[in-house]
Length: 435
Image (cartoon, rainbow, N blue to C red; front, side):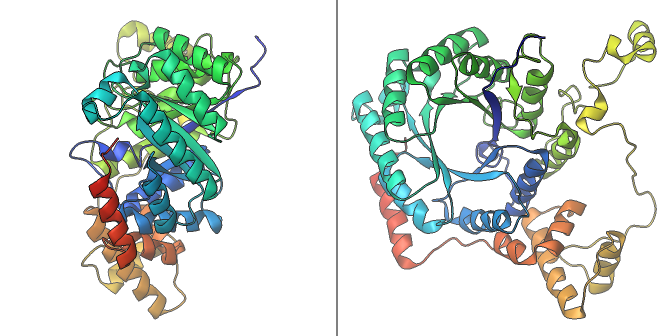
């Protein structure tokens, strides 16, 4: 066994930020919250939970931060994505004042600088905007600030190094290397990340898209390069690989690749808090919430991931499953039979009554101290069903009954803030070109 590296690979899941940007898909705020709860149960380091300058995210983000304070979310960091614009930083601090962890993002490639700003800005302007926003975020007291180089894979390496050095000098804890259009290969990203990490000596985030089908491979290769250069690596993932265009790096695939991949297993340290047995539960819930079936051949959690039919394969698997299975289904929380109700069903939702509601919660072994409490929870359940537009899961029902104050906040959408903040949002939107 080769000696394990001292540096560590962590996971920052971006399902609730990048995943929900998938065209024609989305999540209700309750569903985003249950995903955060499940990511926390799985031991994931951080969730990029949303946009703190977007008004309909405010109550949800504040509610999830409260869940962290009361210990309902135990380890998972809740973070927000912001443009690298000073006014956005200020606005976020006012709309979600308890938020401690952010990433600020700006385009760095010649393609995007020229294509977005039509000659009005150059790379020096990009660095200036980033450093101004970063310095201001530090003044406001954010605990950790990561800096994103959008379209890093099409940015000259010397520009990336300059960008990283300026970010590190001003207090950034990580540099996010964004393969925004899935341009990199495992070979190119290894060389580029290694060069940047060795020169800048800053922890690296890998944010890879799947346009060429290599998001997982590039994420793992980039993480290897960061570790080889002596810094920590943070892989950005989404559940089931959901994301814009062809998707993002799949959470479970990335973890399995680090744990079982040839040349990676036993040499590169994965965040030891990760509990892969939560994979099946998490993947199924995200599939239900997004309304997107898990592909039959999806790594680890697809219906056929552990299925064998051909004579040679079935015979070999029955003799020793290691013949045709690289890892165990139990490692992913699979293998137990699932019960499907085929008889009478009592459910509760937007138009449910108190008797049916009580029956549903009795089956969950949840009792209420009074009729008043039961009716308050029923009102929240009705509202939750309206916001999700589909039957509530057991996890959702349990969450509402266990954390009713936070559930009420999360379920309450607010499109407008106090006049001063509303005016500020309008001013920022009008005056700043979107990076």
